[in-house]
Amino acid sequence: MRKFDTKVQHLKYKVLREVARSAFNNDLHHAVYHIPQQIVAGPKATMRCCIYKERAIVGERINIAMGGKAENPNVIEVLDIACDECPVGGYEVSDACRGCIAHRCEDACKLGAISFDQNQKAHIDKDKCVECGKCASVCPFSAIANNKRPCQNSCKVKAINMDEEKKAIIDNNKCISCGACVYQCPFGAIMDKSFIVNVVDFIKESENNTKYKIYAVVAPSIASQFRYAKLGQVVSAIKKLGFYTVVEAALGADMIASEEAEELMEKGFLTSSCCPAFVDYIKKQFPTLEQHISHNPSPMTAISKYIKKTDPTAKVVFIGPCTAKKMEIKRPEVAPYVDSAITFEELQALLDSKEIDLETLPEETLDNASYYGRIFARSGGLSEAVSQAIKEKGREDFALNPIVCDGIEACRTALLRASKNNLPNNFIEGMACAGGCIGGAGCLTHGDRNKAEVDNYGKEALEKSILAAIEPYQLYLK
Image 1: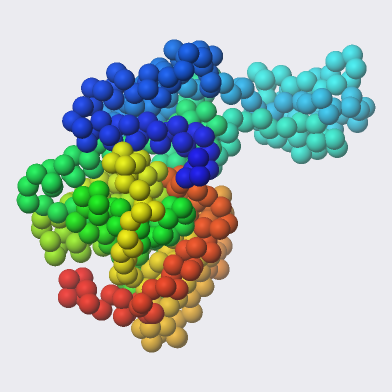
Image 2 (image 1 turned 45 degrees about the vertical axis):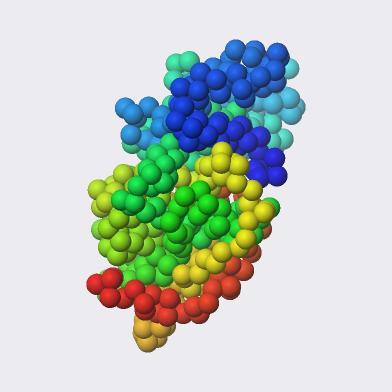
């Protein structure tokens, strides 16, 4: 359990590991019919009502680990059979209600949803309640609590509702595939589809012929993961899996910081484009601001485009913390350059499926980017990089005034003000996940320590400026 924050992540990992192992052994039939019995092996249930239900849920996890429902375009899916333990929730009166006679809750409710029993204790009529929360805000005893399901609480774009059987359903028209619900569901009833089988196929095919090479493009947030080993050992392990080489997405971040600085100085106002969930959020919730989204691709796409341009035999697999990247690679403007995307959770499963022990491997160097490209991984890093790029271009006359948005709620506030021409800032850095990419749903671990580790990783970069980092590649960027 040292590798993960929660037991839910560990269960998900075990399924991914066994699916990958079966794929390497050319025996996915084994995955479908034997893994449930292998993972839920005991005579008694340890997580659910019975061992049969546990195995049925593992079976559904296997389906998602092998790509999920093809008819569902979203990479985030609900496991219906696993979604049955949470209370319906909503605003409820707790035992803290003292039966006071002020009845502020009743006065605050304009729909008549509050009533009282013979002891003056409040009750909420769910048929009338619209969950506005006004009653909770005026209760002097804080006796009215919002007991929303964890998935609904985590979804800041309100894409999760309940069906007639009280199971979670996702509105794909609102969902931005950030994966917050995946990480927060305490029963693991929501998962991101995996492309791990596709990656295994790439590896096996590259071993059998020389028609192409597999490039791993790793997100800079990798510096805050795999804490039980050194980063250089992780690089060695990825190559040991069968990848030709490992390239930093942070080099793409350097490229984008330079181009985004130019675009910002030309247009005067811009929103960032590196976070696919943030971009999707603007398009779905603030369409009038879509014209202000930076026309530059994400760092993943920028560096992958460079790789494909210089090596036509390349297949590119992105490895990072982000479930939304799995949606981004489906976009027509991205698909030609990135062949697949997996999370750090899935990388761990791949490594263990081949029994690769990171701690025993030698360290290899990963050094393509500057400090500024590497700190894209945490909130505020993009703004610092754009500021540096402006300075390196000798444009001190341009006053950068960024607003750093840490999570969707902060993004919403800034975008709302911008839509009303009431935002004093000229650059919105938007990150859907709390803390930035270091808070992504596909991380092994989350927490404040991640930011410090990314900054330290940035300081280790040989290149100390953005222009120095991208100068060798300028010929290919035109």
